[in-house]
Length: 112
Length: 114
Image (cartoon, rainbow over all chains, first blue to last red; front, side):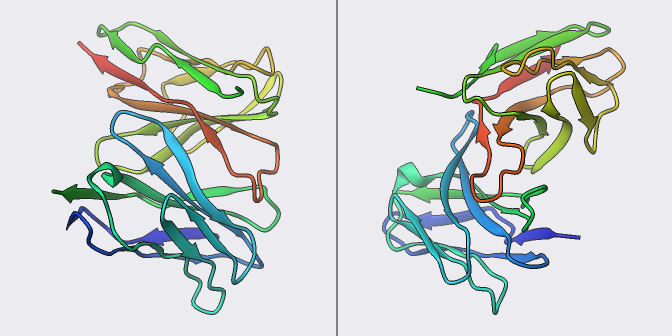
């Protein structure tokens, strides 16, 4: 079945460091891919998404590119801030749009 | 603005009590979902509903019950049969086949057994 695998945390970075959180997926056809962010004590918010191969989703300085050849959707940010400290979830919606799968989440802490 | 409202934000339950968590949405979404999140853990699906008066069990439905009498509302009851209910509960909604639209989440309810 379809699934999402993301790198385990926690990840700790200094402010202004480069961030990569890896996400790979298993799916038939062409799923849609998402990154959600969860700030402490809050629900999940959609951060960015991509619905077809080679699409790049971007928001708030974060980017992720839908790579069909490597079945990946890695999240990147060039310069993290303390306010980026949160848990990040990679997610997939299958080609038929019937099922939604979440990764286990990666906790990011950015220190000044 | 449209969104999902969960209430209360914090809830305390005594041993043996049933408690009900509220979830209301004004997004005109047909599908609604309840997830449980434990510290440092991912999301686990409890129940979901794709249409009024119908709902399906998720991966961890034991000890929980739901109803879907209105499109806008999907309350979750944590019964006394749920032996370890302390967790963060998240409600979400979507169109029936979310595809590229994804889910919209509420801000969560933290339930603690005292």
